[in-house]
Image (cartoon, rainbow, N blue to C red; front, side, top):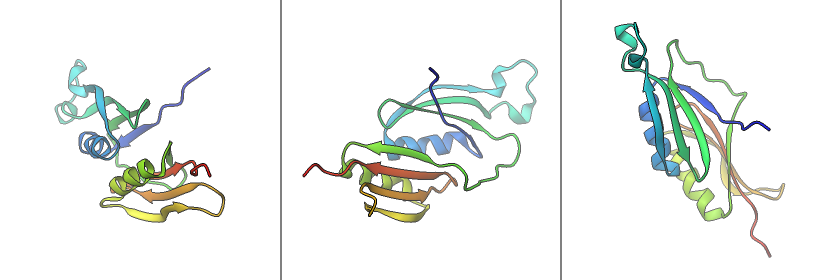
Amino acid sequence: MGTLKPYIISEDARAQSEFYLQALGGEIMSVSTHGELPGAPNELKDKVMHMCLAIAGENFLFMADAIEPVTHGTDLALTIAYPTEAEAAEAFAKLAVGGTVKHPIEMQPFGIYYGELTDKFGVIWMITAEPKAE
């Protein structure tokens, strides 16, 4: 069975990864640049070709610097489900800095603690937590 790992093409993978590490916790597992390839053009040498982040527990996110202009859409969102509302609220607040909140994080009529935002890099996040046991 395969494992799904989101791959974000970024205007600035280093800055975006630092933002996510501050917001969600984790670490950079590896970074490769185009400069490591023989014959890479000078303008690409410092650009991130591949970066692997371990974030928010045991989740992995891949990133790279864009070679062509980045276009943001509304057809894809990253979701993190937390075990507690407090953890979800903290991550949501940190990801929202400089971004736009679409749905504040709160208990929803459909029975889960949920919030949705677009971060300052244009990535849509859906943050959830299971409701507290009564």
